[in-house]
Image 1 (cartoon, rainbow, N blue to C red):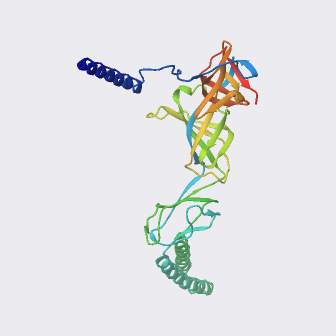
Image 2: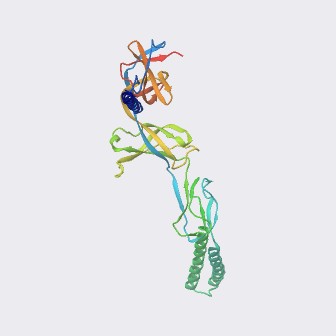
Image 3: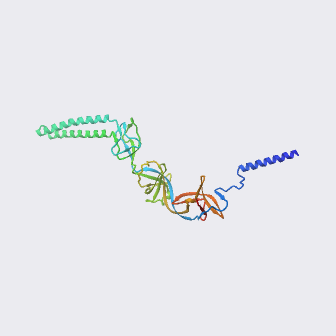
Length: 338
């Protein structure tokens, strides 16, 4: 008898353990609600009932973009020399002709002083030869040779002065310093870029569009531009569509019209929403959408009761919002009265 009781108790314990493990594994539901639907017992709360209908919706394509500058000046040095002083930093605003970088100028000053001394001597000789020519003491040929030496000395002074002037690298136009590419003590060579400038009044937003949309994107289309970092938003017409595509990405570039905003700088991440023409979809009033935790739900009539149904939303169109999934045309939704 005791043996039978032990067997019975062991059997109950094993069955209980198996049932508990099955419940933990989710194999036993016991009235579990299907994902995305929460039934509400009883009559629906009072409110306006709307029938979801398919309607015309303008189609858009969102692409990634970048803020660029139409005017990006690479300011380089024209003579060799060691950097002696830097007048600007990144972000500095400059006017045309303002100094950006100065090179050590002692050698160029010495050349200019020597050329000036030679010019002074040539000028004195030229004046004396003018007097001697009038007196007949020198021939016209001798005077011509003296005049040529005088003109050569003048040209040498002008050249030396120009070379010395090149030791101060100046801004070719008004703008903002985007990048400084040198430091005091560096040896600069002709053609080396020392400073990069951009014009803040000549910015654009450039986007990359997949080749499959080339026929739908047109010049003059109004794109909605976003720069999330500074909360910038504007409607801008497309003024450039590149005729060639990138071989690697199979995309082509589009650019908006020029814009000026002190918050924007070249290189900022941006988004462009491009119009693609008319389409069709489902729109419901924004007030029909309820937020339950992190889920977006709508209240849908089903028979004589209502249920909360999870929906996936698209973009807003005026006072309505697009529904991508969760309801379909013909469903009746409830706008609950507050």
